[in-house]
Image 1 (cartoon, rainbow, N blue to C red):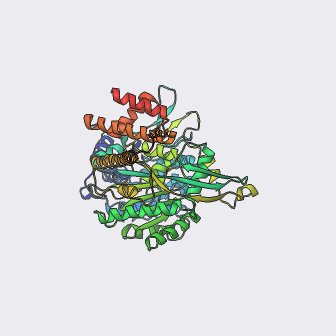
Image 2 (image 1 turned 90 degrees about the vertical axis):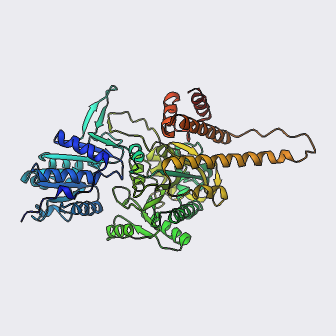
Image 3 (image 1 turned 30 degrees about the horizontal axis):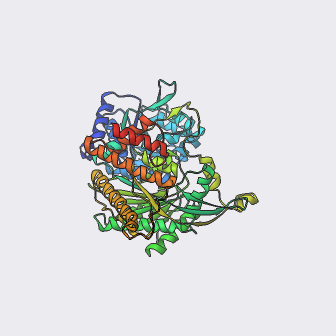
Length: 576
């Protein structure tokens, strides 16, 4: 007996963007449709509603979902079953066909790449809708892309979904439409787009505060030379990579201090209206993940859940954690994309991955809103490229083909070499050693703006930011951050004038000239205050004002801008 058709009337109510996209899809039926929506916006629900509509009206007889990972296969099947669509998540290439109990199957891109002819035969046997989840993965390798194209060309309908910036390489993504722009480059075109800024405005996702931690780092190079650098200060890319590696070393002080701060923030959220709030540490490799879990146990007294992609039962551990009230999970890559754990509200970005794609996937784990007022906090190293990505979280990106590779941003190859395991071949590689690292809160990034002044870990100044209420709207977050920053600056001014109040035995010495770092901090605060004032006058979001200043003046986000660039932006915003 064939599987019963899903009942449309039993579907959950759709969000505004889902309704608009659904109406557009049904009015203008096409073989290929691409939807780009921020993580947490409800792409799965949108896709399943389209599947139900097409099954109900007889346009298709079967549904095939292609997902990036084995865990997501199970997640898709469970979500589909809740709305009456039965998908076989245990399908294997050797099976050739699914049981008649199912409307279709869920497979991975790797499965399709290994045997595209199997999936092509299945697609040709019945009129099929193919849902390609996180479609950018079809460009991960030529075999995957070729396999997806060969397998699903005969499909009646293809629905492409993605929630993150498209790829930064030149591998064309199958079935995605590209349009040539005025610069002659081909750019991906989406039929429906719902970005993070839109979702934040609608209350669909949480506001995310990024707490960037800097600190002094010391390491011994592969040539035996001892070096020291302050994380977050302007350096060459190879020095940034090695300082970054040193900070993430579980044996140093940076990670324990940041994990302690992150757990304190988690406690604030749990006591302030999110009693089941959970935390996630994203690690670079399995060895680091296990070490971070031990550190968390020392900090919290509770064992952290460790999820490694090649462990048997990893999917079950994720599901158990999602339904529990355990405090912390540590993972490498398995929880970076698509995994739905709505109670995650605190993250520690302790990984070397730095592409816009991976960063957006990782941050997407924390933005899913459950009730009004919930916010998320992500702790990360004060590395210029990561600060750039955090500042531009609302920016929409397309896949561009033929763009010159000018190495914009951070050089991932250098970072990969710096992060290489100490067991790598070559005596020089083995001699790298992280010596020490300390942590301090450098700044808080929210809505594209930077707040706060440097605060040592464990001080009242740091606690002021860690103690921000967890249930806040985006406007309330901005208001409180401005208030905290103003209080910090006022306290610094009071400390600066106190010596002058004492009787001077000799004529007062002239004030010491500020260092370049101090000038940058002062200018950044002045710029943020002016942007905040303009926000209150015009109602424009802080991020849009900063983006307009960057457009007018050029240069990177304010966290990485030079003194000259900051001064130019201050003059520009004063003239607006």
